[in-house]
Image 1 (tube, helix red, strand yellow):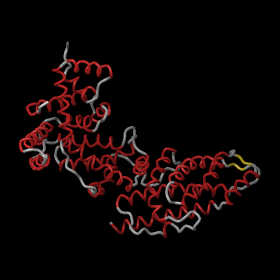
Image 2 (image 1 turned 45 degrees about the horizontal axis):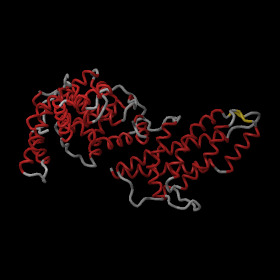
Image 3 (image 1 turned 45 degrees about the vertical axis):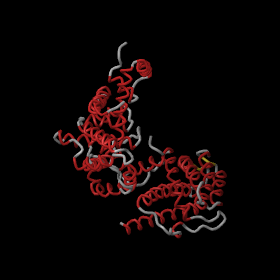
Image 4 (image 1 turned 180 degrees about the vertical axis):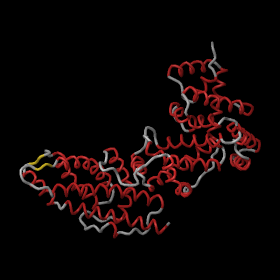
Length: 188
Length: 270
C-alpha cells in the first residue's frame, strides 16, 4: 500500500504539482530501472523504458486508484513499456547485447572462488542471461513481475491484458524454458 | 502414485497454489524422490534468475531521469486527454486521510523546522524566514520541504479564514455558524495530526500555535449550528483573548515566506 508520506506527495502530483512528481521520480527511478532491465536485458533499452514509464505515469496519474502501491503500479507500466519496445524489434535482438554481457559476466565471477568454480559460475550466469533472452517479452514480463517483484497473479494478468490462467501459463513456460536451458549446468 | 506435474511444481515453488494443493504437493514431494529432485531444480532455476546482477544506478539517477522527461511532461498529459488542474494547491476540503498523510510529511518537515527554530518554549521565537540555514537543503530535500510547506501553509490559511469568518459574524438573535462548524471539524482532524507530528520535534513556536488552536476548533466543531448571542460572544471572546487569528496569520506568513525563500534558492541554483 501507499504509505502516508507518499499518499500526500501523490495527491500533490495528481493536482499538477511538478515538484511532487519529481519527488516520485526520484524515489522510484532505480527500482523501475531494475524491472525494465530484467525485462529488456539491455541497459539502453531499460533507460528508454524508465523514461517512457514516468511519462505514461504522469499522464495516467489522475486515474491512479491507489489500490496497490505506487511502486507496484509503476513496475507494471514499466513491464508493459518494455514489452512494447521489445515487440517492435526482430526477435533475435531481444537479448543482452555483447557489449553488456561481457563486463557483466566478469563482474559476476566471485574473486574468492577458485578458477574452475569461477568459470562454472560465469558459464551458469551467461546461460541464465541467454535463457532469459530466449523468453518471449510477455513471458519475461510475467515472470519478472511474479518471481522478482512478488506481484499477485490477478494484478499481473490485469496489467498484461491477459486472464489469470494465461498469465500462469506464461510464467510456467518461462520457468520451464529456463530450467531446460540450465539443466546441463546444474548440480542439485 | 501419480507424479506432480511440472506446472504444479512451478506454481508451488512460486507460492501460487491453494492450501489444499499445497498440502498435496508437499506430501507427494516428501515421498517421491523424482518429484523432489524436479522441485529442487525448479527452485535452483528461480534462484539463478533472481541472482542475475542488475547494473547499478547512482543516487542521482532520479535527477537524471527527471532532466530527460521534464520538458515532455505537458505533452504527455495532454496526449492522454487528461486535463488536470494546474494548481498545486490542496483540495478545499482536506480529507481526513490526506490530513493524516500530511501529518506524516510534517515529520520530515519538522526536521528542517527544528534546525532553524531551536529556542526554548519561553523565549520569543524568531520568524522562520530570519533563520537562514547554514547549509540550505538541496535537490530532493528542498522539494520535500516545499511540499511540506505548501500543506502547512494551506492548513494555516484555511484556519485563519474560518476564524475570521466566525469573529466577523454579526451577533443579534441567533448566529448561524453551521459552515464554520463544518470547516472546524475538517481542520480539527488535520490540526491534531500536525500538532502531534510537530510536537515530537523542536518546533515550539509552531507547536504552540497548533496547540492553542485545538481546543478552540474543538469547541467550534462541537457547538450547535445556531448560537445564542451570549454563546457567540463567549466563543468570540475566547478566540480573541488568545490572539489566535493574529498568531495563525503570523505563522502562516512565516511559512509562506520560507516557501518563497526556498523557491528563490532553487531557481538560483538551477
